[in-house]
Image 1 (cartoon, one colour):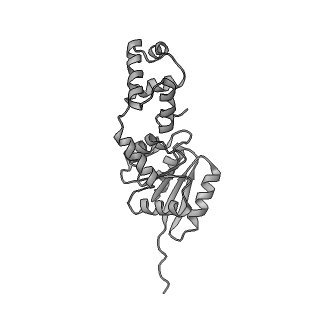
Image 2 (cartoon, helix red, strand yellow; image 1 turned 45 degrees about the vertical axis):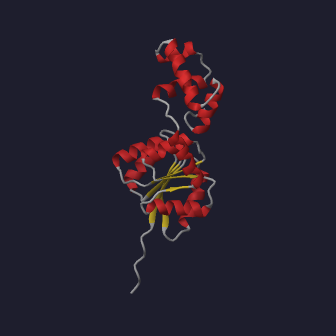
Image 3 (spheres, one colour; image 1 turned 90 degrees about the horizontal axis):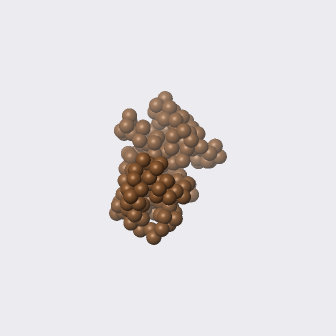
Length: 211
């Protein structure tokens, strides 16, 4: 009698770069215990394919058209709390990491990780565990120790990144110029920046805004 074939862990790949998807699929499909059952090039397609295919693991890029990775995590977690999502991206800003893990992603991995680490991360998440590299985990801990910017401060920060004055910010956000100045001062304090330009640079590096 032939022994039954062991069930493979099914994977959905979501990345807007076909070459990246092809490379990951090739690595995953060479494994006896893993198989890619669907691929998506944007966030909306990723959500639709998950609902159709119900894979064991979603390997998800952070920056994609139509819906970014964080939005995909939030929407899928809301409907499928037990979903197992591994973020795999080039972005290592502590805010990106913190927000994705807080939203419910089970792991966060950078695309330059070694092949075996990628496979280990997929298997760990598939088994119900979590996976973050040492560098990613360190950044997440750093972020937890820092004060958070409010939603309004993020809005002001975006305006700062576009080079706007306090007066312009106030007009665009329908607040007083004094309030805009107060928000800017708070942003500089929380980001430990000495200028508006430095605040924007720090915010971009951390993933608070994306230029």
